[in-house]
Length: 365
Ligand SMILES: [Zn+2]
Ligand SMILES: [Zn+2]
Image (cartoon, rainbow, N blue to C red; front, side, top):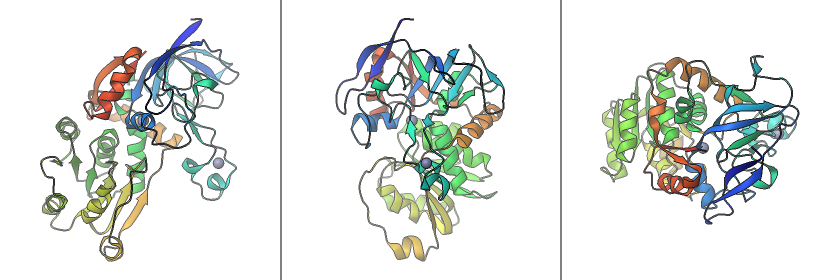
């Protein structure tokens, strides 16, 4: 291939364009992947609306991807020390540039808040190269960590999880679920559904999912939710809180995950939490505004623990992938893929994602 086609998001609100780029060569310590699939997720919709700051438009979207190694710049190995050769099917940790030497990295030990951290398809410009998955080829920069798909895992399995897989995993790790806990997940998108899966693997007794639309709630049921609540059918938040209380002995859930993206869900979710419960906010990826909460009732008297959860680290992607390999017959991640799109139909994919017509959409270059 001397030329490569890639979809470019030129600026917020502007139509996507297919552009041609020179075929990249692997840098020493880097690689070039032939893209098998890239995801379309809520983040891409936010990007297109200009709701994320510091995005160096024009960009090639697609931060979670699967590809076949075309060439490597010298010998490369995965984190276990196994060689990564041409032909290996891999995904990669989309975050790079985390410095390991700033205050956030060293003192706070919060690498996902490192100011030098960069993400494929989000904070990488198309001017810098093929650093997003909506492209026939993806350039793996030196230092970017590739993960070969474990045995038995096909690209469709992994992509069905998408970025919700490590994000949901991280949220559940933050939530510190105890064996036998009852869990509520607010939001039935990929993050919420993956949180529901990992909550079960972490030992939750019952997981309840509150969300919409119907297709996503049906997916939640297939993935083991004890019951689901359609917010379109029950528009009054007080009734939704009552629904949770009826299923938790009137006490509320031990752990509640907010994965909805709606700020109002936070006050509602705190009402669904039992005394001394844990509340994890993972869905507020963009600034969607302020809400009123009652510090006395929601936090202090409730003796609540409230946790934020920003991004994910390599460890979350790695461990989530191993768990997927073990539990792929119980939880059919690949069934979350509603539709696949060719590169030229990326605009349609974005539109379908925006109106929640799909659970997970894939770009197939
Ligand atoms: Zn740092
Ligand atoms: Zn994503």
